[in-house]
Length: 347
Image (tube, rainbow, N blue to C red):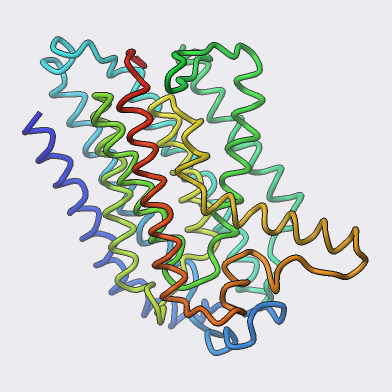
């Protein structure tokens, strides 16, 4: 276990290094080809000064996470025999979840790339329509779930203090809706310098601890890679941001968050782990619904809710700090739920 602990630490450090160093070359290149962000008029007026900041910076952590995940998982497969004999873990099933999850994240990242490219080339913040995005996202989620089904991963999901629950065919329907919902929630949260990167860092750390407690060491390394890569990106994205992750990055991270939760067979933990993402998403839904019902009145000064706090006078740094702290607390709660509530083997 000590060896796997060192390996996990190395995965995080390597992902951090690749992500941070990639930014050194990527940001000047994005400036050179004029891939700058166009700021919407409906956002806070002071965000206009961010006009022209390079977008698609998510490529930095996408490269880091992909490279480190592949390397660490291959090492896990080649050296896991003793681990299997000791803990009776099913490395083959875990590997399917890891690579299928990476595919899910990359597919969503590609959707985001197409959206960002459309925005930049046309010099406007519209890109793909909402329906086009949804169709592509459901296709990505469907492909991911199909791979799990064909690979014999089953339709069971773990629930703390309950056990393994078999949802049958409904597993695929519910999972597809959850995946698309979470991916879009993460995307909506990307509106303040360093916010999504910081929140996802704490989510990844929480899953890393949870996976370790469940002896899912392949997922532990995946989560460590995501955490390290997010930190490497924050070197360039923390306020004032020198680059934005764009939909390329936020949709990829949404897929990655889902991949981690599904890989430990605890998608139910997306509720506490993704509490900030979900609050941002539901703040938009509530704002739009209330606006229509009251013919013009608003619940919040602006949505998603992080912009409401901006309008209330909070600095971007304060928003990131508070939202990250909330995520860290709910990450700890999630870890405790698994520690005391999962007394059974998930593989």
